[in-house]
Picture 1 (cartoon, rainbow, N blue to C red):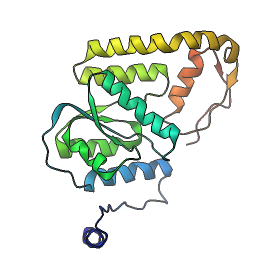
Picture 2: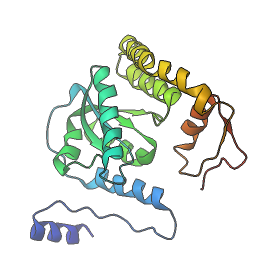
Picture 3: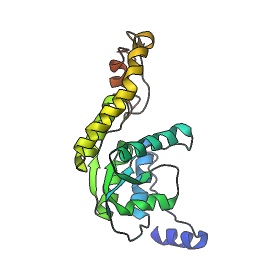
Length: 218
């Protein structure tokens, strides 16, 4: 397989990655995981020194290059910069191969649920610290995400200041909207397993209830 990949790369002049086919033993989430893992194991990485404050995020779901997915990338980048960290690479972000390869200069790899295997592989390849964080979906989960990264990168106080600033900007609007739009209403959820915990926490936070149909499709 590697010989075939090398021949194709020489012919096309573009990076080529061999992704194992397991369509009968997994689902689309598994396919996404395996695609990222293949990239992490096979992508050519440049020789460059690791910078202390450089961070790569591996395992973000970027299933289409549209505004909502680009917004997720922007928010993660903004949070890391709020910790005085330099987000050098996000897997995936809809960017270029060069942007993926920039992870070679990261001293910390932040692993998100959609790419745990890839993050571990990449951290081992570049010799970076691995931080297995939860998906920052919803306010409580985002607080925990910031604290996990801040603690790992020795920025605990900065992390608490960032959390206070963000909550001060968001909570007043929720306090006004909650009683009118969400309180005592019942919600159901159908979706992937990584979003379900944040959804359940969020509806509880705004005073809503989880209905009997609220479950994930495995």
